[in-house]
Length: 224
Image (cartoon, rainbow, N blue to C red; front, top):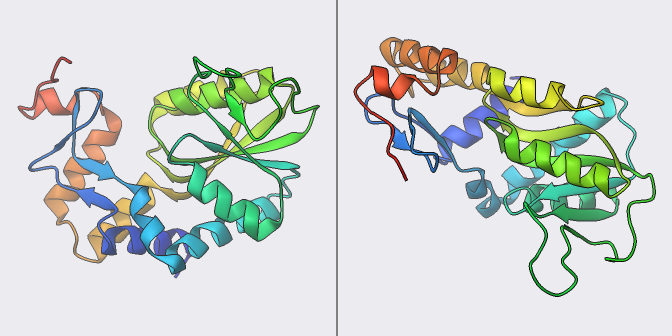
């Protein structure tokens, strides 16, 4: 069994990943989506935390990725980044979605507010990537703090075209490296009986048009 399949099986087994095209989930964006991913559920299981850290270490090693600092995104990326940094014995920071509005107004925690990253190579750790918007902002924050960030690790990647465009639009581009991709998740879920063939086709259709899928199937966007 490959590493992606192992992560997919773990996520499905503990219901960190839920698939239901018949009764889709309402995302914070107001769109109804047939998948919901809550990687925070991995926190409860020590073996799964180690599995994720080991997967990230393999990606870094196999890809020959050089780095000086591990960065987690606030908040869901902090835990996997911490486990990885502990296993690798490397410095750790985390990146807020925006600077604090009080105190030293830090956006990056772990370095002095009057300093910066001094040209260090930083690997960003995310829990998942959908549109890529928040992750790209984190990369930009690291670069603005004089850090070199050309690689992002994520537990799960929805493989949406919009996220590929967002990361590719950075100058220089940032490479996304995922432990588990949406296409592999669907294969594992189908092979293990979590979804049937009809549901699998609906989930494949969603990936082709994620923001039009709900309306097409009678689940209009909820304005917030």
